[in-house]
Length: 126
Image (tube, rainbow, N blue to C red):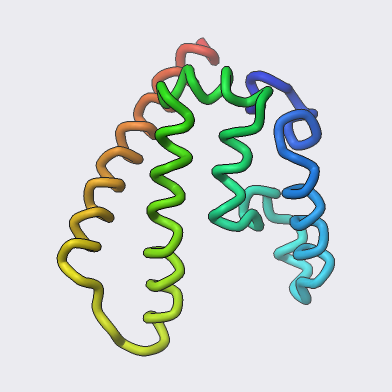
């Protein structure tokens, strides 16, 4: 998004409700070190989908991920798993094999996306 919007990417590419929620979270944090972290570190998992689906961003993300709606659906599918893992972390429980399989598949797809982004970024910087 920085390539598309420049230094104004946060204001131009992130929906206002996501920016507002980020502001509330940062104001509530007690650690000064956390206040200096990048904005995207504080965004909820669900909000990444909102950013991808925002009208001005569809074109930006399409060059990296093909079909942004498909990735939004993938994030929606992963959200309950992510939430379960967060809860289970404290309870020493395990995931079902089917869930683990979905996570592995998503990891492979995300790795491919990271490789595409890295390749495009290198071309942009050259």
